[in-house]
Image (cartoon, rainbow, N blue to C red; front, side, top):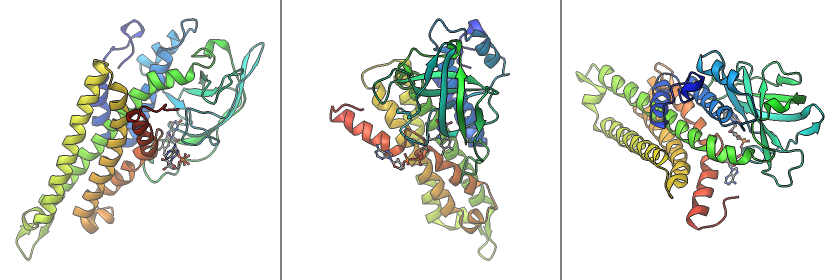
Length: 335
Ligand SMILES: Cc1cc2nc3c(=O)[nH]c(=O)nc-3n(C[C@H](O)[C@H](O)[C@H](O)COP(=O)(O)OP(=O)(O)OC[C@H]3O[C@@H](n4cnc5c(N)ncnc54)[C@H](O)[C@@H]3O)c2cc1C
């Protein structure tokens, strides 16, 4: 959708991207997250250094035949994905990577992985390089099952790279330039996309709650739940207010991405933090408003509630974003 026309893409922008991700998430947040990770990987591949021949991969992606994903988080540095603890070793053929990637969406299903690792000669904790590792590469394996509370269909299993050889033709960034690509290419798309996933979840929670309040009845009173209880109407109203607030915030961050300015990075950081809170709050209200019917899995609300808890713990986590936002406001260095 966002790849350039020269490789068969539609060259569409963040507005369409966010609308598509929110629509997918309204139906199934796992699918939306698989797509979002793919889009982050595709953008990173498209931004590869000029000497790397990524065009065949981009053409496969544009044709819908190649699913990719991001393998950044490591067991050693946990949610601090910007600081991998693995380090690539260089030899005559390229580099060898040994790394424990703790969660990788679409693990075992993707055709390729965008993998981070410290540059062979990097000196600082963020001197990483990004590589494109095809599935089937020797030494690459899915290292365990995925059994999350929510997003149960997105296969976010760990993967292991064991002395995995990567040729120079698959080195996407210059040595040590991975961190800049994470910040400039991946972060805006990922934060916007995660906010859009939250919006889809909120919309689905409102639709399910409204349908329940209209259809479930107190037969002894001759009224639906919605007709009978002002408290439930007030909860539904709060859900709607929070959801429309999130929608407006997403429009605002899209505007900032379309016309970058001084406040763009701040808005990008804020969008994911605020969206994570909104999704948890709206789906929690839906659980309460729909009572035992929601708790007993008679409706989709409990899945929305479980899925909604992923956004805040996916890196950059809501806590880390708050730390960055406050540091930016206080004019302190972010890293
Ligand atoms: C469904 C799902 C899909 C995922 N998919 C991918 C993927 O495709 N690719 C990928 O690379 N990763 C992926 N991840 C990993 C994700 O991005 C995080 O790295 C992971 O969730 C971090 O969990 P942790 O237990 O290691 O957190 P920890 O780092 O142990 O954090 C624990 C708590 O401490 C807080 N905390 C940590 N650092 C700070 C700080 N500096 N200031 C304040 N609070 C802090 C956190 O907010 C959190 O509440 C996925 C995770 C999930 C749940």
